[in-house]
Length: 300
Image (tube, rainbow, N blue to C red; front, side):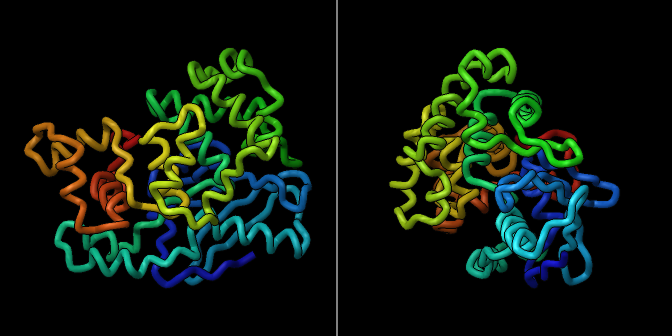
């Protein structure tokens, strides 16, 4: 199946845009530069294992184990467009930075899209997994969730668990089997609330709430603070917040403040001229060396 690429799309930059490509069920073959993953709930059938690679004008999506029908292919194409942000309009963003000496490289390289998961629920859980821990622990927690609760494809690969699957596990399971620590009761609670339709993370993608109000809604989920909320906001297309954590702060100090610490207010002021796009600018500013394949240390 072929999906036409937008003119300003860079597949490699999008995949490498942040650490999600290292989290299950994503699997990146860097030699061939093929991104594999598992899409669940396609036509309410068995999850589908797909591999995505780039051709000159298209993205080629290939299926393993079973060939979906035309209706499901259309649904899968929509998921690919969502995950790789193919329909995001980057024109305004590129217009803001194309004359900036420090940031013009982003537009020149057609970077700026942040790869995301199949659902906002998955991105929410993964964002909680990034808080107050090492990247290695984040990867371990996500892998455990997929391995122990994910539904299998016909070939045995596993999808990220559905809210219903996660709601069926209790706090002890998350603590003992997933090794989620203090997050354990949060996983159990948010999964139940989503499964019971008390909250709907997918509405955060489509809703028209102002960003500050949407952030408040997201922070009502236990385990989600300012950092996780602003990180998730970027994945639903809201870039007002900087999503500052210790890594971003330290990188800013080194790059723009002579290695000296400064207040978050000063960091915000530095990027304020970019308005609603400032959260995207700071991320690509700090992650530039990783996007240029100099990833000695994970930015997450």
